[in-house]
Length: 505
Image 1 (tube, helix red, strand yellow):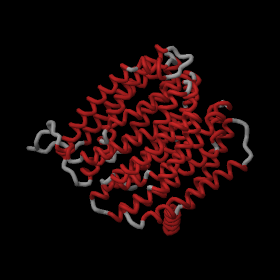
Image 2 (spheres, rainbow, N blue to C red):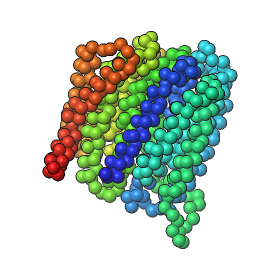
Image 3 (cartoon, rainbow, N blue to C red):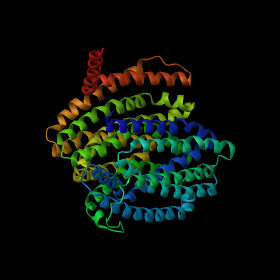
C-alpha cells in the first residue's frame, strides 16, 4: 500500500471513529445535561472556530513548509527556526485571547446568551473554562499541522481516536459518578485538551531532523517566516473569510434564539457535519501530497491525483449528503427519539447537509491553489463570497431563524461551485474544468440525488428507531454503490482488480 493510501486510510478510520463518538453520544448529553447546557456546547464549538481567525494562516503554512522539507525543497535549520518563532507567537496569542474571553465571561452569561433555566453563575464558570480549552486546542493545532506535513496521519489518527474517547465517552462516567453540570463537562474537556497538547508537542520534536554537527543554533530568527509571509497572509485572509462564512449564522443565532432552541440548531448542524467528517480526512492527506508533487515539478502527477481525489470525494461525500438531506426528519427522530425536535431541526439538517456536500466539491479549487502556492484567486473569490453570504445569512437568520440560515448556506455554495470554480481551473490548468465537472463530479452527483430521493420517498418505513436507522443505512449503501458505479476511476479500479485476480487464478 502506498504512503498516500495508508495515510488516507488511517485518517479516514480515525475521523469516522471521532465522528461516531461525537455524534452518537449527543442524545445522552442532552439527557444528562439538558438542552440548555447542550446549547453551551454548541456555543463553545462556535467560539473555537472564531478563535482560528487569530491563526493568520501560519498553521497551514507550517504544514506546507514541512511537506516541502520532506520533498527536499527546504533545509532542516529553516524548518526548526520557523517552528520556534511560531511557537512563541501562538503561545502569546493563546494567552491573550483566553484571558480576554475569560474576562468577558460575565457579559456573555448575562447579556448575550438567552438562558431560561441555567443560573448565570454556572454559565460564567463554563465560559471561563471554555477560554482555557480554546487556547490549548489552538496551540495544539500548530503541532498538528507540523505532524500532518510530515505525513504522519496514522499517528495523528490514533491520538485523535484516543482524545475523542476521552472527550466524548469517558465524560459520561464523569456525568454518572461526579456530576452533570456544565462545569463538570468543560472541566473534563480542559484536562483532555492539556494532555493532548503535550503529546502533540512531544511528537513534533521527535519528527524534526536531528541537528547536524556544526549547524547553527535555532535561536529566534524571523527570516524563515518573512519568506512565506505573503502566502501566510493570503491563507490568513481566506481562513478569516472561511470562519466568517461558516460561523456567522451560529453567532447570530446564539444571540437570537433561546439557549435550548440553540441547542437544537446545534444538533442539526452537527448531524450535517457528517458530510464534512467524511470529506475532511481526504483533504488532510491530499494537501501535503499535492504540495510535494508541485515541489518535485510533477505537474502530470499532480493533475492526475487531483482528478482521482475529486472522484473519490464525490463517491464518499455526496451519498452522505444526499441521504442526510432527503432523510433528515427520519434520521433525527430515530437518533434522538424526539418527534418534536426532529420536526424543528429536520429542515435545518436537510439544507446544511446538501450545502456541505456542495462545499466538499468546490473546496478542490482551493486545494489546487494551495499546492501551487498562489491563492490570489481564492482571496478574491472568498471576498466576493463573503460580501454576498454574510448579509444574506444575517437577514435570513433574523427573519426565518435556523432554516433561513440553511437556505443562505446552500444557495451561496451552489453559486460558488457553478460560477467561481471554473475561473480557478481556467487560470491554473486550462481545459481542466470541463473534464473535472462533467466527468469527475456531475455523473456521481446526479446518481446520488436520484437514488437517495427516490428510495427515501417510495420505500415503506418501519416504526422502531433501530429499524429506521438500519433502513437509512441500507439506503446509504445502495446510494454509495450507485455512486461508485458512476465514477470512471472506480470502475477502472474494479476492473483492474477483477482482471488481476482472474490472472492470478
